[in-house]
Image (cartoon, rainbow, N blue to C red; front, side, top):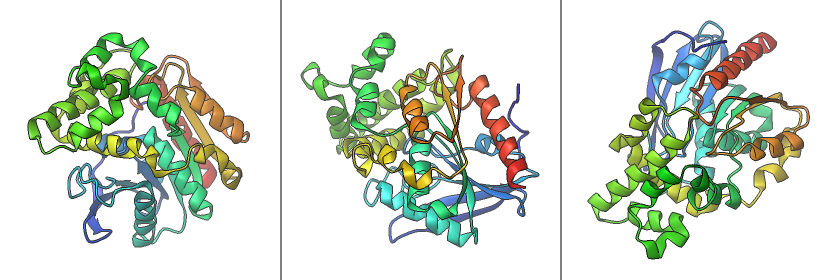
Length: 316
């Protein structure tokens, strides 16, 4: 079973202004002359970490990480203004051009898979391939599953704590109730809601309880950006049309695509990955039998690294 590559340092860091409000943190590591690959993090609002460099052979890849608007080391923190899906797609193009990259490989999980697919559909000629994990199609049913009814039946104990900041009278629409608190001027209520929202996701991300992941999701700096930005996107249906990704798969059917999904993913149920594979019949589809949602579960990590190694050979 493959494990993460050893820790490496970045060789280039920059802060790129993308408009009059937002500045993005970007870094490069690995081989400056290697295959360009961009790591597209989840959330939206999740940010990147040094561990994300380790899915790639540093001798073969020019590894690009960036923090999307409002999260990680990008500024301003947890900012919702001028923060939409189209903004993020435009940002990726600005990064590509700024780094003088003609084409790159996209590696995205969860919301990162959403953004990878939307970017590929908008700019198919700029994409060398797609490595997608924990597919999230961002349909209304996918958002409702995790934030209203679905995962709540699998994790009723965790759901009870997720509900706690919301009065009973508002629990028929948890997304709206949380959004109201996450965008309020009450700092205590805002932070309380952010931690409950983020910890709910962290707890549901793995089959086996993982305190390190839950603690990370509960970190106040991380939780505030994650919760505010996710709620902002999801209450606006991710700023895309219903079923937009599946309806536009024809434009990316020739792109070499690998889909990796945990059988017991409770954040993004596997039906979404199957639906995508059905629309992209030439894609490779790996179901990890003993995993949930997190990229750091052993079976998913193994499949991801096998896939990046395979792409390194095919794109050499």
